Image (tube, rainbow, N blue to C red; front, side):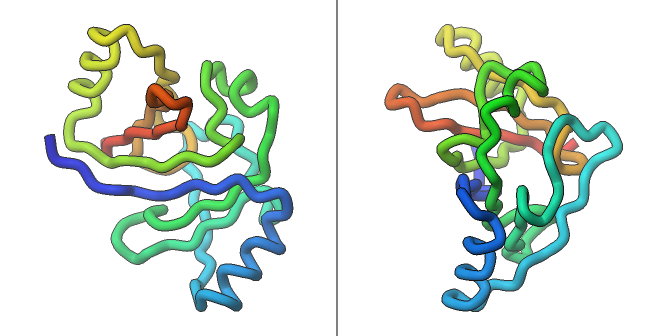
Length: 138
């Protein structure tokens, strides 16, 4: 199965302080987050969410998010992608990944298209509890 890293999402206690760090120390340019029409619960204020695009595709690169203990419940998820950080892998066949997870008995949260336009995503944990997002363009 072909795949690529789509983004890395880091939890930030102070999103603006962290964004200033990445801009000043690493010279990264902050971008503008665009939400899909079917937006789920994802606080988009600059003090809650920041995007540092890498220029490959929409929303690829580094995401900074203020941890939100209610994020999972408000989206109907089992997993909370705002806490502890996660990395995201883009694949061509998300349904195949979901079938593998079902076959292995690994629970996942199906976010549909809720945070990034035209991107269907799921969340699950590896055996060590690291949160993984897998997504596919739709």
